[in-house]
Length: 351
Image 1 (cartoon, helix red, strand yellow):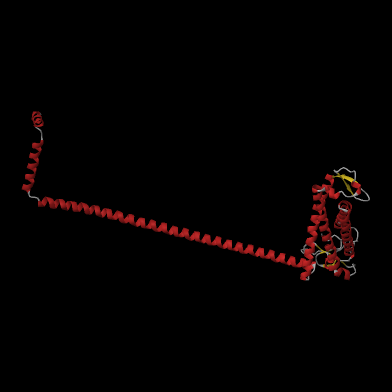
Image 2: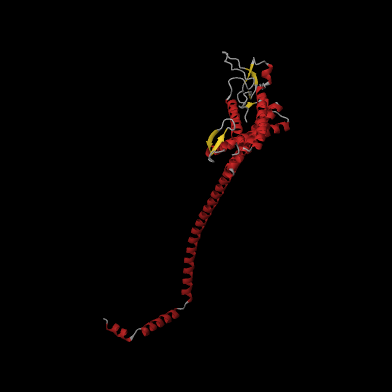
């Protein structure tokens, strides 16, 4: 349940209206939940209160056996009345900001300073007894209604005769059901009852969750001995601190990424320089080896020629002349002996 009593002040700094050349038109100051015009939250609250009152008292409780219907009329009716009284008391409380009340609603209006954020702070929420009774009675009421409607929904399928004990059901078809017993019976179908029950279950569960959440929240505030406004300021400070922490972490991560990028770039440049130096050293070494090889090749060729000439001269000098003639005659004899006879005759016939 939101603050639907129209007694909320805008969150933010409260002070005199800014002075300008023209006097801005002023809206009527909201003093309590009965100040006109009513807000849509108020209208919605009264509508759902009326809906639950009608369907509970006029549809579901009359379907129960006589004893249980009396118990539910007493219990649920008393809770409806208590919730209504607590709601009216809470709505009638002037929940304007204390500074507004101190000025007599004349010189100051609540406003939201730029950059302070939006939202509403219901100061009646800090009046523990009326607000606590309103919320607690609403939670109990919605819980009972939820259980009652689920019970009727299940019994319509399993044992419908248990819900048809009223005298008005005598002679009525089993597919027809009566609403708003016992004073204004309205006949309807079984499908109508099931659809209405399903809608009411969903509707009551939704409000039950919201109202229970609000009750737990204010119990938590009372345990910490703080108001709703204090909690909002504290939450805003935590949110701001968390945002600053996230921005700081992002900046730190960005700085680390930049350092890693620079480190990788420096390593890449150092590696390229080392590779370039290595390639240059290999080229210089090959140039030196090429020059050395060319000089060595020229010197070696001249040396080999000289050695060969010297060896030839030594060989010719060391072999006797008679030996050379003997070798020539032997080679000639071998040649003649190796030529066939027919070849020799042919050779003689040739002029």
